Length: 124
Image 1 (cartoon, rainbow, N blue to C red):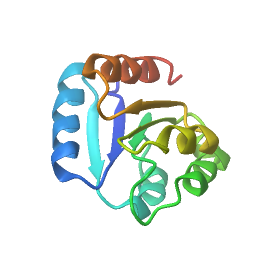
Image 2: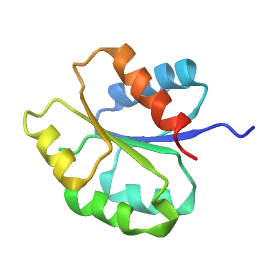
Image 3: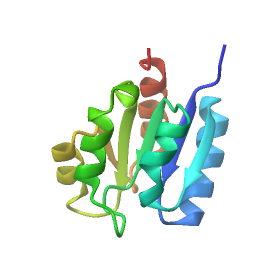
C-alpha cells in the first residue's frame, strides 16, 4: 500500500519542522514542506498529494484564489485542504475559499491529528 502524502505550507520553518515530525510519526504519511505560497500550485501539479495543510493568511498569497484554482483543476479535485492559522479572520477566509477544514494553530494537537487521519482515510 502506498503511503499517503501531505504537503504543508507555512512561512514559519519551526512550525513546518514540528508538523512534519509530528504528522509523519502519528499518521505514517510522507510529509513534505513548502515555505513559499507561490510554489504550492506547481508542487501540487508536479506530484500527487492527498492533503494540503496551509495557513490561509500567509503573506504574499491570495488564499481564496489559490483554493479556487485547486478545486477547479480536475487532477486536484481529490485533494483535501486543511487550513491552520493564528489570524482571527482566517477561518472565514478558509471557509469562503472552499477549504475542507479549519483549525486554529493554538488548537489541540490531537484534534489536528484526527482531522488529518480523517482526510487521509477519505482520500479515495
